[in-house]
Image (cartoon, rainbow, N blue to C red; front, top):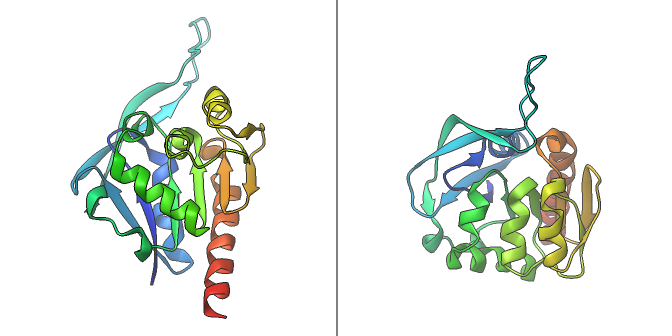
Length: 195
């Protein structure tokens, strides 16, 4: 089964991560979770919560603990040549993971090799840190538009944007559209490789 790498860390967003984790195998791809270490990680629900009438609304994202997910491999032990695609989820994790040199090396491999890459929400922080979006058009959660632009990308507020081998989405609300395009890219790449 062809493998797709999913880098995560503590505070990775639950729906950003679990939706592709379960969706990819439905189309014949093994989702391999990697982290700074091979261990169990905490995910978070990352949202602007609704408020009751009369309560002041939140104007920033609130995090609360959610499910756990196990990384079966550490970034330093990943050979990206073994993977056909990369899925970069959001949450708070990318803010910290973007400093991991092994993860940046891995990310650059997928872009240099032209393999399919999906980025959702705060995942932009990793692809920008790896200097892989310069000259591209992409989307992300609106509060990370500046990250995309500082990385040399053109930000657009669209549910899903495809530019070359990169497919990006704003938030988990766009998961269905994102995964439809990402899986299509993975299958197209597989059919090209078999020709």
